Structures are given as C-alpha cells and as structure tokens.
Length: 225
Ligand code: NI
Ligand code: MN
Image 1 (cartoon, helix red, strand yellow):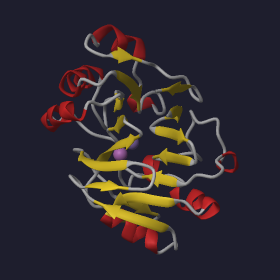
Image 2 (cartoon, rainbow, N blue to C red; image 1 turned 90 degrees about the vertical axis):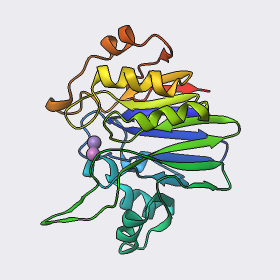
Image 3 (cartoon, rainbow, N blue to C red; image 1 turned 135 degrees about the vertical axis):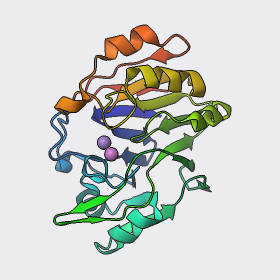
Image 4 (spheres, helix red, strand yellow; image 1 turned 60 degrees about the vertical axis):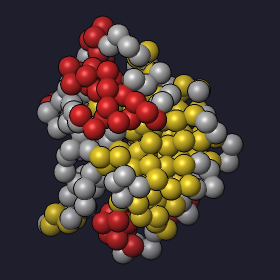
C-alpha cells in the first residue's frame, strides 16, 4: 500500500487498481501542490466530516472520476443532490468492500456543511480504519483527544494519521496521548501549518512520541507499507 500526503488532511492511498483519497481539500489548500486534473482514476473518496477543508472538492473529483464516496449518512444524503455515487456508513460500522474493509470511528468535532448562506447538517464527524491486504491505516479526521482511541489498540494499526495543529483539533501534547492509546506502528502528523490557528512544529511531536515511529511527510511524499 502506498500512502501519499497531499497536505492538510489529504491522504492518497494506492494499492493495485484501488486509488482512494481521504478528505480531498485541493482547491484553496495552500499546502497542496496537486490539481484536481492531476487526480486521475480515483476509485474511492472518504470524507470524515462536512467541513470545507475535508469535504473539499469531493463533488468535482467524484464526478470526473466516477468515484464512490464513503461517508456518514448525512453527508451522503447531501451528496445525492449532485448525483455522486455514495456508500453511507456510520460510526462503529464496519463494511467489506471489494478493495478491503472499512470501519468508521468516533470523533469529537463538528460536521456542518457550509452551503454558501446556510450551514447544512453533516451528521457526526468520524474517522476511518481502512484495511487492505492485511495492512491497516487509521485516519482520525478532525477530533479532540478521545479515550475511545484506546479501543483502536486492538485494531493493530500500521499507520495512524493524527491531527496535531490544535485550535480545532488535538494539539501535539494530546496527539502524543492519542499515540499512547492507539499504539500504531507508525504515526504521521497532519492538519497543521495550513492556516495561522493550526501552526505546529512536527519536530516537537517527534521529540515527545516514544512508543511509535513518527514519520513527518512532506507534501507529495509517500510511504509504502
Ligand atoms: Ni473540521
Ligand atoms: Mn479541519
């Protein structure tokens, strides 16, 4: 499985013919060096919650690539207006797809969808555990520290993507506690240095984490697991 960081919380997952993207915030993402046209053959899009920096360019990418969007029921209902293919899940649910197994996890955050003038209900925010060929990743979405993360230890996560930027989510100190709960083999920090309120130094995260290997990915950098 090849995992590429596109900036903010955008992760590209590639394995054989499967090409998934999590939280595709492309336009307006100051860290992202990829254009929507660069994203080809995206088979699946995972959306953790309805905020603009996560739902992002889901509609445009899904339409261009005929991708299947996996998200909570409320976001899928919203996407139905745009004739996008969706598979609704919800927190705690685990489902087998042709590419692997997906579980939606809890997050403490918001999920409103900003539709210009109105804020549309985007259900509850979540995260994803995605298992493909015996490798498991966890993308936390946006969340504060949750004691529920302790339950993820049993999942034996290979790579956890955790927000560290603070203000809207866990900061570094809380993300360090999350790593202790989850005990992933590797942890990749995300959701930092995109905007002023989420400035954080990933080197500080490296210094504070002792139980897992921290991998700080540059934008467009990949790891293979
Ligand atoms: Ni958010
Ligand atoms: Mn966010």
